[in-house]
Amino acid sequence: MSKLSKQFKVPDELANLYDFANTLDVRHFTHHGLQHPQGDELTNAKELAAWMRQRGLLLANARISPAMLATALELRTLIRDYIQRDPPDRSRNKDSVRALNKLLKLFPLLATARDDGGMVLRAARDDALAGLSSVVAEFYDGSRNGTLDRLKMCASDECRRVFFDRSKPATRRWCMSSLCGNRMKTRNYRERQRNAE
Image (cartoon, rainbow, N blue to C red; front, top):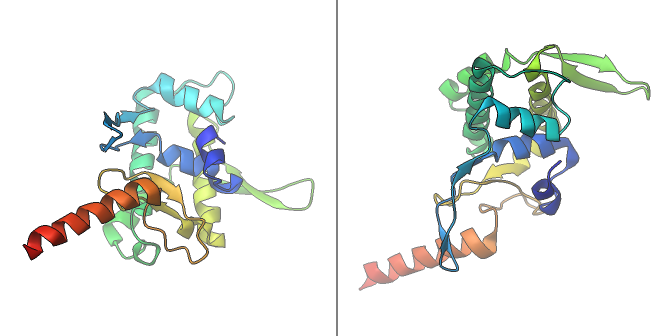
């Protein structure tokens, strides 16, 4: 769990998924006169290894190859593509679902009994990307228990940050109403005023 997932009160069971989806920052707005810098935390295998190690997802002495990095980035792209759709529409885009299912086959999961009597999904892989199976398990568990429907992408085209919707009716559209929501409402208001003139 990262500082950001704690700050925005993302449930522990979705924290790695939330953090992984947000390793790509495409925000391109100006706030208080400063342009937000875009970035990608996973531009090479070393950065992916560091990200995974920080979360306890990397096996000791595991080495990430360029092909593994490409697989991880494709997983992130497909997860972001899935999350950007409204929850009722997520399964309707057959091409997106097909691509996601094809990639998820690379991250098989095994059900394992815990000492406390419960069950947990763990990686069937035993290589450097085994830790990303934890992200896939969170994706699955969230889908099963409904919390994945609260993981959304900000509706602002200038943001596209993944956020956890903590509102009671789960109808939030922006990661932060005071920033993205306010910018969008102000822009729409000005556009209506121009059209009225």
